[in-house]
Image (cartoon, rainbow, N blue to C red):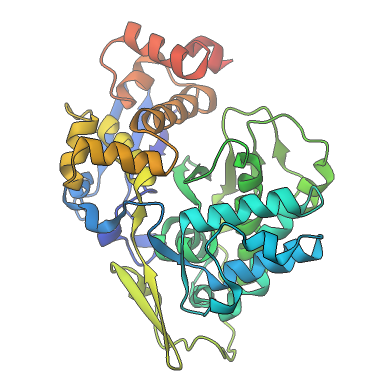
Length: 410
């Protein structure tokens, strides 16, 4: 039986993002005993659009201010202060000043990451991350996310919330989801920007809880989802079950959110409501351009449709390996971004990462997906990963995952 997987339809570049989920790019790899072939809709943009993205559409520095921070900071303060944190200590070292926060205020990924570090160290309770993820629900109706109420169905809502950069900067700014499809379900694999190893699990919990809470609140129903985690079963499992549900798996190959496709077809209830803070004189189409500006009385809120540099690198590596491009190294990427190799290395170091680390993360996840989840043959997996010979493929998989392809298929 053939199995379909998508080419990259997350971490996409910003200038041609579709306005609805139904018009998204579809790059499918057909996996069978005979090999891999690409199914490409001639009416859809080519994967080559990455070549023309340029640095104008990439957030090159972790200090660039692109996050619409007012509602996110308010959610953080509401949770952390209720759990014993001190407001002055929470904001210390972040460059965020409460008296200067306005609806149009923008933060950098470095500022928001620093704020979460302070919350993690100061707020009491093992459920703080989940509460923080859910706290945005109390804010979304007065934030730019309110436009998502006009989505037609759960699929469109999920797509806009997890795939479009404009909404990422309002809700889950440190996380970008890479989306994969099988015949019956959607799998969202998170990638994080500017997150240290000590902060990693905390940020996963925040991101997953945010997706659950926002989907439930905007769709006005609980969306059935399952979750996998690379870590072992936690002591505070009751917090996971309360905020994420009972479908949880631990010691998994990677972290992910899985949703059955049948669940995505449900229509959203279109309700007539008064939006006091943001006037909805726009449609979802307004978010397909490089940026969108919302008007709130005399205040303009600019939503950026730019991708953080680490996510752009991940996308570049994934697309290049899938298309088996001859040149997929650091010099070629620097040329695409019109910067020197030294500058590109320095900018990635700002984010706490490197080209090699990001490349290995992408290839590791791809190998795990092909071998652990879909159990494909070595030949099929090697072809899909752009690796020409099987001995090199086996060595690469062993180096990236610590296991052989056969061990991963068990």
